[in-house]
Length: 167
Ligand code: SF4
Ligand code: SF4
Image (cartoon, rainbow, N blue to C red):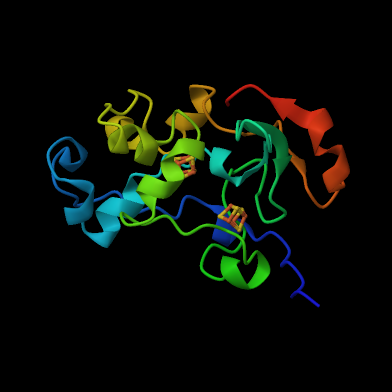
């Protein structure tokens, strides 16, 4: 039996990404493989879009996003309720590293900072690294805040009813 998912804890879901003391605009000049672990983590904009369940067309391999979110996602903060221990609760959660990114980037959301940099594109001006404010992603309407449903409440055979455009 899989471990029971923890109750959401405000302390765990507050912005956990430290963006102080990083090299000046490092994402524009340092290759991804040469980033420090803190710089790598700080690239995440906190949008929560990668925690949405996706459906893949078996014929075309086309990916469709749904608004059905992982059971550990807090739909208001857009944070994982148990990031450090997430693999115990959600073994299929993908760990993004400079090594795994090239294989994963194609199904990440098009606004994801990791995907953008992998494709040689700049970050959007609402990214917290540029604004200095972790809430700027929500204010720009670029996060999943307030519009997801939990996979705990929607059976998998109904996910098709919740397909959305690339978020
Ligand atoms: S989609 Fe990318 S930027 Fe957004 S939460 Fe996921 S890893 Fe972070
Ligand atoms: S377990 Fe993984 S997919 Fe689920 S909310 Fe946490 S980071 Fe997102």
